[in-house]
Image 1 (cartoon, rainbow, N blue to C red):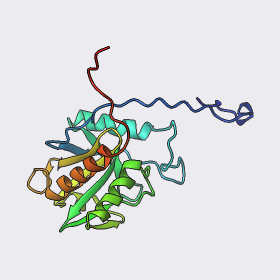
Image 2 (cartoon, rainbow, N blue to C red):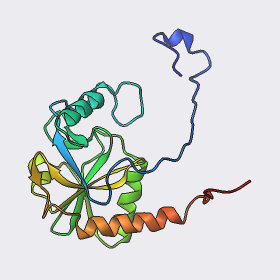
Image 3 (cartoon, rainbow, N blue to C red):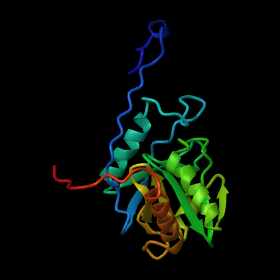
Length: 197
């Protein structure tokens, strides 16, 4: 709940309401998804800071609409310089010659799942590099996946009509999915299903 347009109305700070609800992953994590590149760019951190959650996600919504129209699950968003930032809803990783790469979080939300996966990559004894990555590098990647709270680790099998690798989920992606599953299974409290009263 915001204070409105005028800071004068914000005498006591914003009201924050958090509703925790478990939902199954929203993407096809067993077969992979298709992405397209949006023409809409990710917000520059010089205008609306893309590293915070805020209510101004019109660019992401427009990119998602582009993805929907192209019959893709999501859309890759580029930063103002033409480098890959993230998708409209998730962070993105790629693998090339066994090295895992992800874009700097300058133009994207540095997600919790992203940070967890970055830690897992290192714990799995893989090389991780965080740097600016061109779209053509993603097109030529051996593997690509996205990360997000609702999608966990989602393999990408096609970008802009180009197959990624052999068009199937790659071994590094499966390794990270497996490590993530083990990690999350060991956390939290198991909720029983179909309990009779």
